[in-house]
Amino acid sequence: MPASLRELRQRRKSVQTTKKITRAMELIAASRIVKAQQAAAAAAPYSRELFRAVSAVATFSDVDHPLTNDVESPQRSAVLLITSDRGLAGAYSSSVIKAGEQLTARLHHEQGQEVLPYLAGRKAIGYYGFRKRQVAQQWDGFSDSPTYTQAREIADALIEAFLTPTEEGGVDEIHIVFTRFVSMMTQTPTVVRLLPLEVVEGTEPPAPGELLPEYEFEPDPETVLDRLLPLYVANRVHFALLQSAASELASRQRAMKSATDNAQTLIETLTRQENQARQAEITQEISEIVGGASALAESAPQA
Image (cartoon, rainbow, N blue to C red; front, top):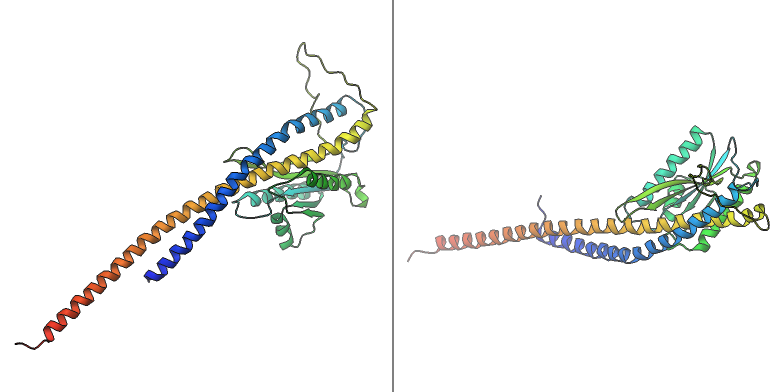
């Protein structure tokens, strides 16, 4: 049954209102993503140099530190899942949750580990809460504008769980699942093992003629690692939060632009249907007037 002219006008007005909302959200995300990109890019050099410093201490010293020692048969792992606090960002949060589920399945079924979820973002909290799953710790309210203080709070909780013996509820490994910002069109879910630290510097032989650096650690390598590794973990968490924030805003801008374009297409369709309905009503009214005039002319008495 074709819709009436009034229904078509109401639907078009409703879609126009929705279009204004999605367009406003698109512009807001576009205005904030530049700042988020700059914050993520600014954190990269410090993160890279901090990693080089930690790698140098771990490589060129004989320190046996708990944050760098692999466990032969890990029994329990912590997984930090970073999602958004709000929706309307396309498949951003669902992609991270899917990657986290795949990691959990691999750790649990293939390696026989128990997995403790650490959640950042209301989408992950809602996902686990709806399924009544146990959560070790959760944080929310800062997915689109994280600070180093919040990252340090998460890092301290992860380090505390890592340093706790497994028999007392601690973990042997820490993994982090977040979205890496590649470009405005590409954001990739990424899984990284945060602890134990995987040292890669010094694993390749030096090139011919290359001189290896000589390090001196003061007061001693163990104390240096005790100071550097918590900073390193906090920095990695902060960098992941910044990458996720930029990815969230890019996903939201793209999703809202798609919604705005779809709303415009629907408005054009409804406008065309409204014009057709109005023309049909006018044609029907003209037909009724002509028919009534003919009936009056036929019923009039002959002179």
